[in-house]
Length: 146
Image 1 (cartoon, rainbow, N blue to C red):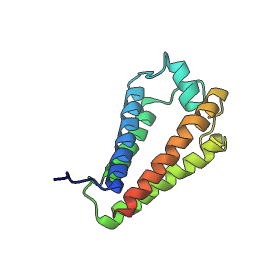
Image 2 (spheres, rainbow, N blue to C red):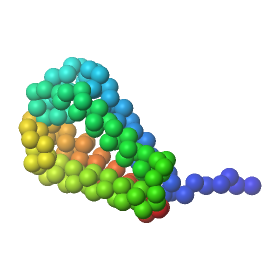
Image 3 (cartoon, rainbow, N blue to C red):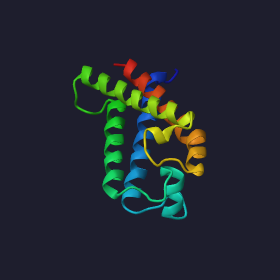
């Protein structure tokens, strides 16, 4: 007897939601003063923000909250009407796709003023923008399940 299989769209939605949640938790840690996974806050600022200072705690917590909402929408665990969920998930995908496009082309500074250090631009092109693109696709897969 074979075991039941989980449909690929469910797996993609779960992985996407989990990734958004983990990124949100990291933003909470940064808001609390952690430099994880970097050795100090200056390296964190240069690599992740592209400037000399890490944003204030409230900005990190705001991003974490938005990522938590995005994760909840993608995972379909928030008590919202279907049409609102689908619109929200498409919005999440749009934001992530926009962020990816600007990052891959080295233009994130046009979205976030001051995000222009060479270390950030390199990490953005290699890691952050491709991750945003993958998460955008995952969100679209989740939206299609609605």
